[in-house]
Amino acid sequence: MKLFRQTLPPLAMRTGRALQPLGLATVVALSVAVGVNMLLLAPEQERLTTAKERHEAARQAQIRQRAAKKTLVELAEIWKTLPPRKEFATLAAAISELARADRVSIQGMTYSLQKAEEGMPIKASLTFRPQGEYAAIRRFIHRLETSGSYLYIESLDANRATGSRQAAPLVVFNVRLVTFLRPDPPPAQGAT
Image (cartoon, rainbow, N blue to C red; front, side):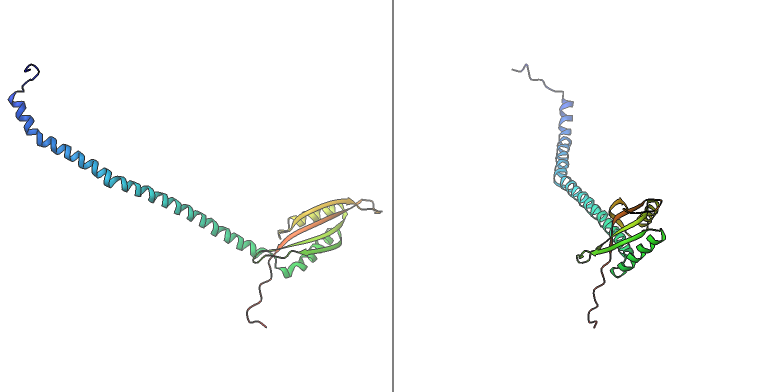
């Protein structure tokens, strides 16, 4: 059976024996590197991923908080521009004056106030019937819409005025305006 067995030259044998410690050191170093990677690096990468997710969540929360703060500032500005409840009567008078300036007569103005929830604006509505020439009523309605005082036309319908004997036919509108009012401030504690 000596056929399959080859002998190495003595120089190769000595070199192989001299390199055995270096090969063993290489295997140990590779084992240590793999172990360090598995024991230290993998958990740190997991911690880094968790930290990135938390950072993104905190950034999103900060963006939402800034948006909410901006909305609160805008709402406070709008709240300041809403007329107080005690000025609602002057609003009705101002609408009558506006109609008179446009040569429109107003018949039967009624109003209603909805009960407000705590801290919410009061919804107030005015219902009236302006009568006049179509062009005058159109100007009047345009002025109402562009008055900038948070007046909204909730409903509007028109009819010809019956029994009018003027050259230009008169038109009668049924108008329902809605606005929002700031509630009256609560009475001060201890006030008599």
